[in-house]
Length: 59
Image 1 (cartoon, rainbow, N blue to C red):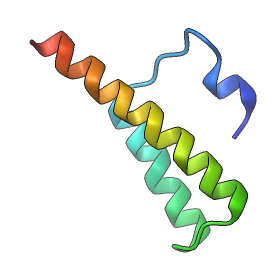
Image 2 (cartoon, rainbow, N blue to C red):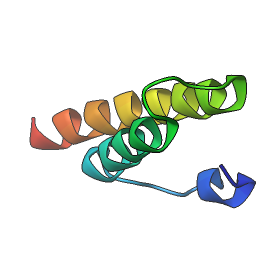
Image 3 (cartoon, rainbow, N blue to C red):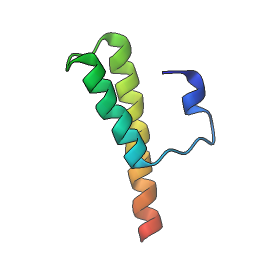
Image 4 (cartoon, one colour):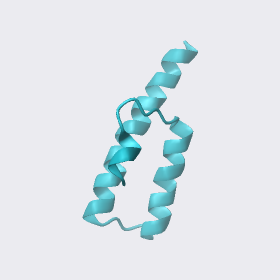
């Protein structure tokens, strides 16, 4: 994952992040390396924040 993809102020939707998570799992063949695991964890944290943000906007 490039450092620029998580630049401050960068806002990605939960759907976009979910798609990136799915693509990561497909690329890895279902078994993540240490580097892929770190990327996965960052994506999941960002995805959770995006979901929370979307729920707050809907409320």
